[in-house]
Image (cartoon, rainbow, N blue to C red; front, side, top):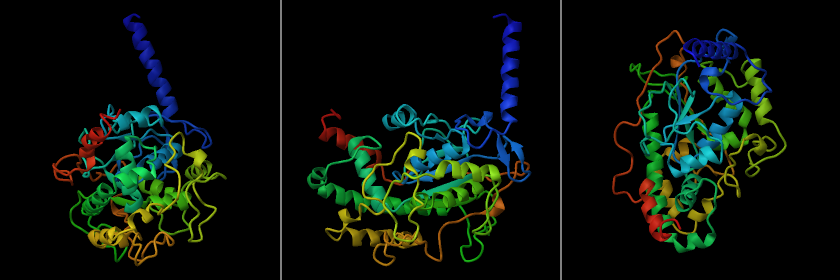
Length: 392
């Protein structure tokens, strides 16, 4: 091509981008695009805008449902989600190649709206500067058990046979005792990133303006009340707080939520807290399907054969009760209610529009939670390869 032809092609591509970016596409269409080419409604002006401010961090302890939430976000928003994981790692390649998580390794706000991280449980491959935090939590009994599956199979979805638990029962017990402390420290770290008065409105009452707004979301609520949970997530990300339980988003977002999250096919068990019939439709999750079998709290029996369950409650302090996960005093998982002094926090004062200075934090800098000689986390890879002759 000549210089003039190349210039004309570039101008044509830019014009097409401008047309796409300034047209709000119908809510029923199934599209997945990078952030720059997506037009989303601006809740503050009720107009179409592709400038929803800032970068949202999706932080979670491993196996807490971040791939599920990423799938839901991509379905609802039509925007690719990213991660701070090096894209050539085995599990990252699996997410990209098998489960269509095409944003693996992307952290640029021009490409993605949300970036997944496990920091400070482990550092990602790039420094990220998010403006708000989605803290996704899951009861540690299921999360640690799922982590055991992933660590020993090196996949996201394969399931271990019961004979493997019998063979490595001592290791599982020791891992559970170590990881419940990592789970606790992970959530303590993220709650320390905001100054919150939980006794009043949940707003940031501290003087440190660099603290980013944080919303905590339970994996269990995504399964049992998906529309309500995702409504809170979207409202947080677009900076439009829902002050009352009956508040709703604009018609576009409500249409997207119902389009994605209503359907007859379900995953998980039927909850016992009066929310049956509102379980997440499995066919609406895209290609990623969580490991099946048992439902919420399915793994608790693995900890109940010895004093392990009681030991884990002692080691976790009050963190279990903060999320309603205490088996001994809150009847979890039969009851999925959130305690009165809930740790589901939102700093609405920092949900600024694009003309304001957004708060910013820096992640993937500093120490990881586990000591370098801790046998779990990434160090478990060497143990697995030793037991399987190099994963053969």
